[in-house]
Length: 110
Length: 110
DNA sequence: TGCACATGCAAAAAAAAGTTAGCACATGCC
DNA sequence: GGCATGTGCTAACTTTTTTTTGCATGTGCA
Image (cartoon, rainbow over the protein chains, first blue to last red):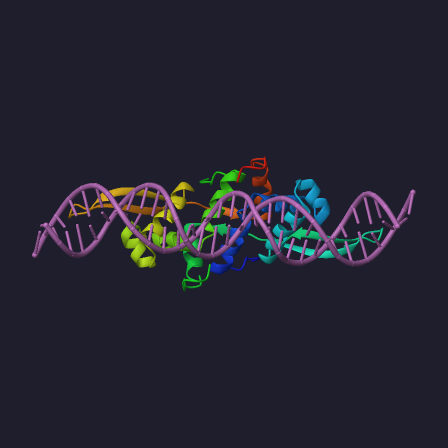
């Protein structure tokens, strides 16, 4: 019964674009193992905080991860991220269906 | 029993990158309805042949479509494309697994 | 021969995405 | 106060992707 709502074509494009990046796959993998905060995640992935934030923003915009603010014992404000549940099935048929809800190509909407 | 071989992290990134484009989704949708040749496909999609060819090349490189050469009754050589079967399941767990086979980020390998 | 339609390729231009570097602000603690 | 750690932002680059433009080749047929 617990079905995933079929994403529209545009949403699908966005999610796929978001997932088609090594850094972002690593972020999802890391967070699915254990949710953490930005600085810590940046250290464990070996990338800069600035870069990680850009990727986290995209992941969040695509609805793949969520953030919550927490205050550590020593008073530091930390932003914790966790992976959202999702299940997308990619097949020619699914794509054929999603394509029907794609925004027309009015030559000026990438 | 007919299982899809799990793609490696790198392959997954490539396939997702290929699918995350409206034109290419339209190509797959169109071809899954009926396979055709380049010029005809370009007309039905309303894009230039040159542009379509670039997208077809990417789709083929990612293993999502296949081409075969055919000669029409009136002797014209036409390149027919068809969609390949594929089924990819995208979930946090699947990504977590794929990430393990990603090529390390040696700073110089997109 | 000249037109219509099929194919191909690649340089150049335009647009989008990724990355770096630098600065700002807050808290706890020696 | 000064240092370490947490957060955020953005302007400026660099790199990649997308799209356009133009030219080349081949066939059949009026």
